[in-house]
Image (tube, rainbow, N blue to C red; front, side, top):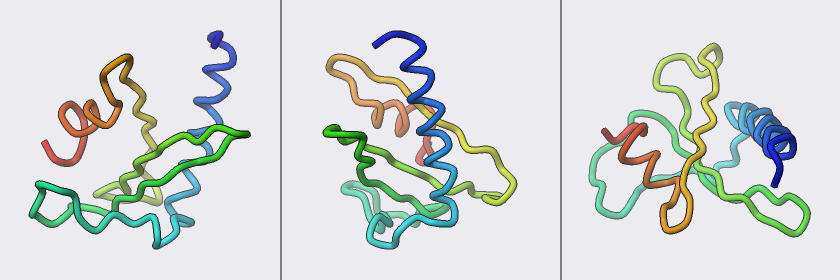
Length: 96
């Protein structure tokens, strides 16, 4: 995928995720995670966004401070053998 297409898809995903602050469906709400017994500091959602015949996984965490005013961060990383979820949990996420 070339850089222009990657940038366009990233921008579209950012716009899409910003709508989840108000429109996240309750059936996408995460209520527990295996191996984690504490309370979540904010609401967490996950699911798939369909783009054509492809599905992209998302994990959305509502701001712990002011969701209506705080910016939305799109966290992308990973690669062969490494999930972006690992980066979220171990490098940047709310469970540090």
